[in-house]
Amino acid sequence: MSKNEKLLITLLAIIAIAVCIYFYKKSKTAVTTETTIVQPTRFVDISKLLIPIAKASIHEASPGANTNILGSDLIPTNPPCLFRTMICLGGAAIFYADFKQKDAVSTMKFNGGTALIADAVYIFDILIHSEDTVNFKIDTAVIVKELRVQELVGGLQ
Image 1 (cartoon, rainbow, N blue to C red):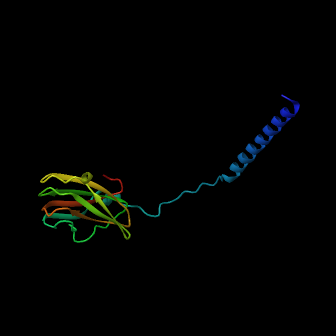
Image 2 (cartoon, helix red, strand yellow):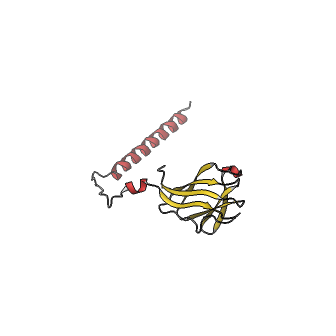
Image 3 (cartoon, rainbow, N blue to C red):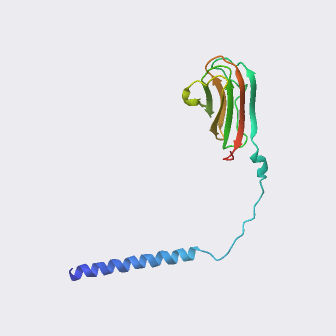
């Protein structure tokens, strides 16, 4: 290694050390010794959030094929949340939801788009945000023996 190369390496090492010292001193001056205790502005009674909110309950209804089962779209009370949906049909049908966000509508088929079996109980969860609304449909005119929707707040399942 030549004398110039050794000199260049030494100079780069000195620059690197100077940069480290500079940033170390800068980080020390940014830290203050004053401690501030933040007082909570309000307390939230979470006991009310632990109880699911009943959003819909339908018993022995005949909504018809491809029409809204519920009279109005479900709107979340405490978003983000889950809408836990239990359904039992009197005949085989594909169960799906019209999931609306602002002006966009997405159709979501439950059970992989496979018809639900008659007289069997199914439970599905849907993630809901503040601007979402939901209504449910079936593709054939069968009796909805039971449809219940509960809102589960946050991740409290």
